[in-house]
Length: 319
Image (cartoon, rainbow, N blue to C red; front, side):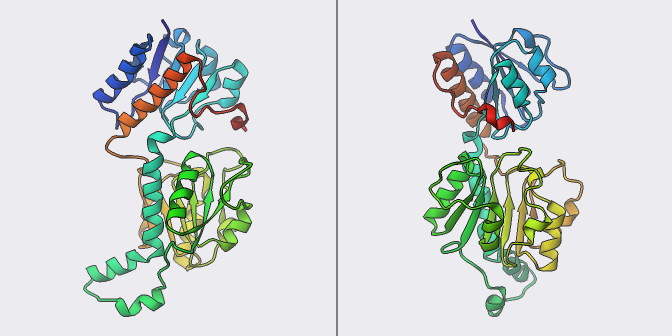
């Protein structure tokens, strides 16, 4: 019998969610145990065949060396908390769980894009102050998604879904992802995409090449009416520079859900109607725990059957 070690439990995961995950494992003839303490590696790490980890668990090179199994399953979309290079050297396979949060992240990003492009904060704030501002609409110049150019940065599972939804709403999508050979949309280098974008939505993984990707220089390429949304990783976007751009009028709007440090120490910088900060909430829905359990179960079934792992991270992702 193989052993599944679940290291870490997220606040959104209920007892029922974990019981569902355990039942799936045991139905496959696997034992299952959860270790909630995250500050030290579990004593039975060396006897586990599969390690399931949350974002708060750092799978370092030392952890990989102590791990006795051959598969790490991350309950997250990104895997920047896993030392992929160390896993590749040891022959440990890594799978991730992007479907658990995909649709929720798209909902959040789309809602932010539409609201900021349509200048809804201005209109709602004015109404709350007792002002009827219909006459101000020509000056506000709200924009619709239909016909707008949206740069989707990161054309993975979530980015592709976002692009498909934007297609349905009549937007012109340009994809920015140097690691994807073929897309269903025009693929442009980042700087070319930014210069023509009415909106930018970030969905890329955090890698050495994407860290500080959208810095002050990149933001300066955007037209002043553009909107930027980041639901990817905090280190991809220079948040202070983006806030300054909004405050100066060089950028219409900004919605940030992920930060380089969490909690973000400068939340008060979001005190502007066109700057929206949310607490890493884009991927959350009431049923997230059940969705994560389903993703883990799918990975375990494929592993036991010797089939292709869903959303396996290839060694090149260690770059």
